Image (cartoon, rainbow, N blue to C red; front, side, top):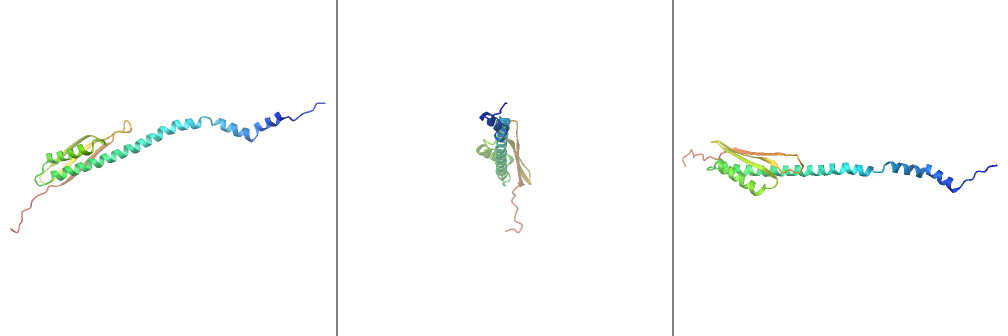
Length: 153
């Protein structure tokens, strides 16, 4: 007669196939998944952060260019103003304010008998490699003129 015993090993063997064994196998199958996700997600997150900073710098550079164009227009359209004086005024403001966010800035001014305009162009400082964003701003307005008094006062 043979008899079968239930020993502690048989109970332990049964536990391996039970609930705790399934959990261990499921967890073992996901080993390294967090590392792989981190390797992919971290550079993408950093790239998104740099893109946000790049957009903020472009916006700031655009505002500075617009301020310089407006300043240049105020000088160029004055009664005795010239296009050269407007361009110099815009360039002076750019030199004072836009040394960091605006690269390769150029100023062009034009003054006719009726209107004047100042155009500022350049590129925003590069944060994201290979992403060069253009910056353009223009201000235009009528030239100030002295109108003679028609009533003879």
